[in-house]
Image (tube, helix red, strand yellow):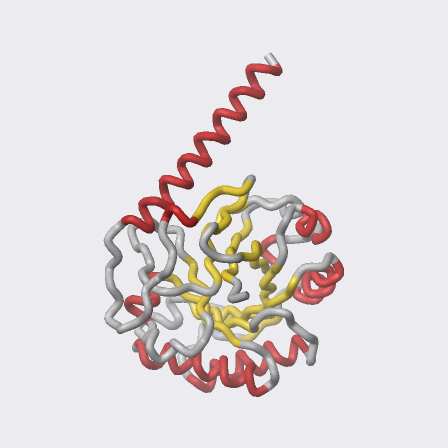
Length: 258
C-alpha cells in the first residue's frame, strides 16, 4: 500500500509539473495582444522556463526566487522559508482601506521585516494603494517611509495599485500619475521604486509609456492575457506553497541584470 501511495504521489506531481509547463507554453506561444504603446518586446519564450523542483526557473536569464507577503500569511517561519531556496521577499508595509480610504499599517510588518532579514533574505517592500489622486499617492508614500523609518532595503519600495470599487473609473493618466508621484517620493527619500501591475491594468488602466522609466513587477497567471513586453519581476502564481508558510503565497521570479 505504501509503495502504491508513493507511486500515486509521484504520478500526481508529474501531472502537475506537466500542467504548469503546458500553461507556460500557452502563455508564451499565444499571439500577444499588443498594448497600445510602442514598447520593447519580451525577450523570453516558453522554452526559456522550466521547473526546478517545486519552483519556476529561467534558462535565458539569471534569476532570483522570491515571495511577497502581508499579514494574510500569518506567522511565518522565515528560516524555513530561506532554507527552501527562497532568496528575497517583498513585505507589505501598509494599505489604504477599500471603503473609508483610511491608511493602515500592516499588522505583521515589523516582525516580517526583522525576521526575514535575520534569515538572510533580500528585502523589498510594497504599499497596497487605493489612491484616487496624486495627493493620496503621496500620502501613501509618506506612511510607507514613516513605517520604514530609514530602514535599509535591498530591493525597491513598490507602488501596488489595484482595482477595487473605491478607485473604479479612474483615467489611465491619473492612475499613472499616482504611480509616478509615489515613486518620486520614495526615490527622493533614497529608496529604489517599482510599479506593480497585471496585464489588464497595463492594457486598460495604466499608461505604460509614462511608467517606462521605472522597473516593472508583473502579476500574470491568466493564460488568456499573455504579456508582450518586458518584466523585471514576474509574480507567476498566487497559490504557491513554500515551507514555513501556512496556506497560499505569491511566488516571484526576479530577472537579474548581472
